[in-house]
Amino acid sequence: MARHIPAPSLIEAAGNKPKRIEEFIGRVNSGTDGVSIARMESPPGWEEPAQTPEFDEYTIVLEGCVVVDHDGGSFEVKAGEAVIAPAGERVRYRTPEGARYVAICLPAFSPDNVNREPD
Image (cartoon, rainbow, N blue to C red; front, side, top):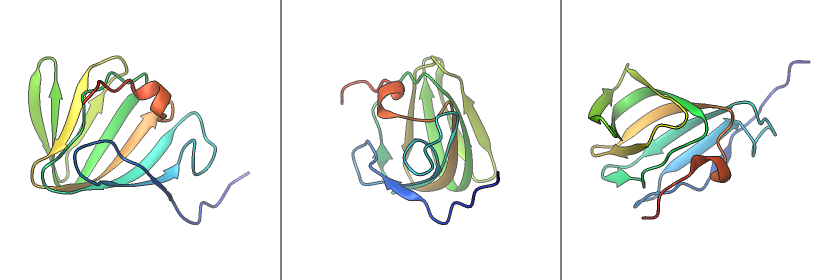
């Protein structure tokens, strides 16, 4: 049966500065384990610790730029572009100039399956 999700839940973000995470679909807001879909708004200068998640992450940048650091180097994902980070790959996200983007994780994100490195 179709289900209406009237509003997102705010999720606490990791990183050096406050970042807004609005989870529309996922473990917290809809009780969905198979996928999470969240809208992110991160400030200029935000960065998080490296992680090796147990989920595939698909990110679409709406505004600004997200820098993705990985074991092979780094690249910028600008507004209108996307990135796929496969499960098991070490990545780190940062937004030197700030960004708004949508992140989709399969299976759903959880603190237990993101495998963040210590700060």
